Amino acid sequence: MEGKKTKKVNKVSAKKKKQIISSVFMVLFIAAYIYFTNEAEKENAQQSADTGNIISINADPSGAEGITYESFAYTDVPEYTGNKAVEINGNIPFFTYEELQSAKERVYFEDYGAFDNLGRCTAACACLGRETMPASGEKRGDISSIHPSGWHQRKYDCVYDNTIMTRSHLIAWMLSAENDNEKNLISGTRYMNSDCMTEYEKKVQSFLYDYAPMHVLYRVTPVYSGNELVARGVLMEAKSVEDNGLLLQYCVYIHNVQPGIKLNYSNGYSDYTGIFFDIASSSVVTDDIDLDAYKIEMDTHTCHNVDCRMSGDAIIFAGDTSMVSKWTELGYKTCSCLENEIYANAA
Ligand SMILES: [Zn+2]
Image (cartoon, rainbow, N blue to C red; front, top):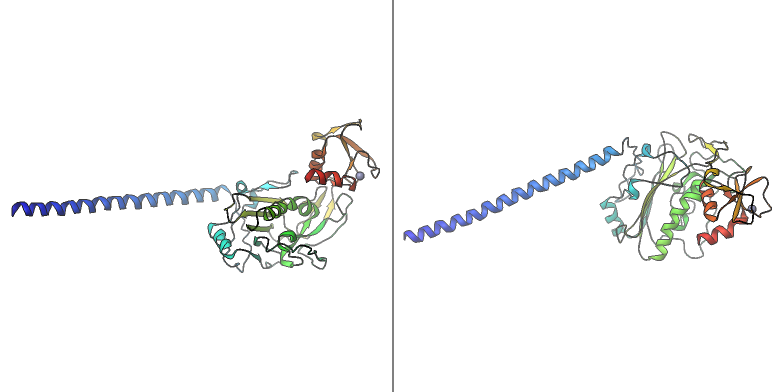
């Protein structure tokens, strides 16, 4: 009797011990969870603090379905110093986990943000795939009837095609087949549009060709300062969807500038300054035209092959096509005499 009772008591206490132990573990687990969650929040807060004065570029006031826009510190973007693009956020796009999940569910889509109260374009966000690209043989249409906010055209000798302003697609036609969607066109310089954005658009285009049927979550946000009608630049974000950005991912800011010209961002008016980044320091002047050499026509800031007859007064530099690429990066235009050469080099 006595022994039996003791045994029962022992049994109960063993059960209680187990309960106590599991409770302790539970408490420890919860404490650890709270600790690590707090740490993660602190880290996020720290990151936000590090980015300084954040200007919201919250773009789509109507709130595109399933997509919420992030913030971005425009004030932290360094001034233009001759680089085509500035990597932002360690080249990691600001897409949230939810945005990426939503893109996976929707497979492909294109959302163009509503105009803001100043009639300016806001962000365009899309999940791009072969489905959204132009059909083979599809031709781009005329978009000259669109006049984006701050549109003011002017001609300059130093600009390719002479016109400084271009109707810049936020999401390129080659990716979206969007032709004259006015919510997708901003006043952009020839340099930003043709020389800088195209390079990043082509990265997405190549990816979609090479890795079909994969998709790319893509967002281009015009960044304005105050009430100015012309964007100071664009933030371009891309992330391959199915592999969570393993094969393609970038986050860059591109300045809406035109070397040699000063743009008034309030109204789109512009003036010639003749200020270009110094090429002489990085290039070797030569008289020996048997060398690989190219020349720059100084009046029009045009690069030529050394034996081109179209040139006026020019300075000759020794170097290969990478030197010419650097010049174009700095905003110099290229003569048709270089087209084959540059193209062959790029291909
Ligand atoms: Zn030429």
